[in-house]
Length: 241
Image (spheres, rainbow, N blue to C red):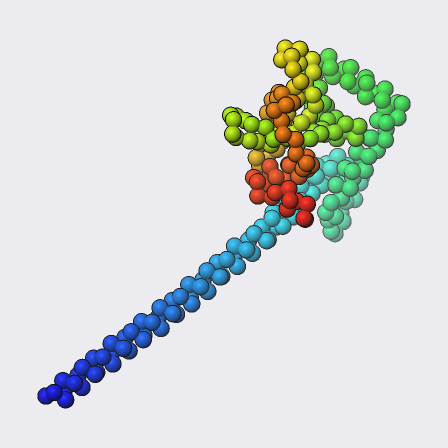
């Protein structure tokens, strides 16, 4: 009886050991699969992170090129348009090339004496049309500010406390405050444009005392990249790239 009982105990112990060994093996396999799954998931998201910006950039560029090609093709003379339509292949980007050539020719004409005369005449006519004159003057000022070689749209990047003490935001200095605003405030003020994320073309203008601004060494381009990325791309990373 004692021997039989001892054998049963050994068998049970052996089975328990086998169960434990199988459980440990199963747990190791589960950990291995979990590690493999985590690695595959990380690789997948890394692939998205690498390819998504490139793919989206090319897609947007492709759509813009098609949009410009379609618009420019409608402006071509009928003979040239019919010849282009009969081609067995399309030339992507042809509209961009035509647009650049046309804008260059218009710029060359506008820089001459006759061109300046017609520009002044057109300004004089448009500025006397109600409502349209306001929109025209605003758009002209914006384009002259951002595209003119003679002036810089924004000169410096600054930090300022807004909307309360202890909270800092980035601002772009446009110019010193002049005119009626300066006369009323009676101190040295600066016009600061505060762009929004992720669209820096929208924002608001504030008048800040010059002494309350912290001037930064980063360029306006670096500041815009920093704002567009939501703070992900820091100025140091921009310099390294």
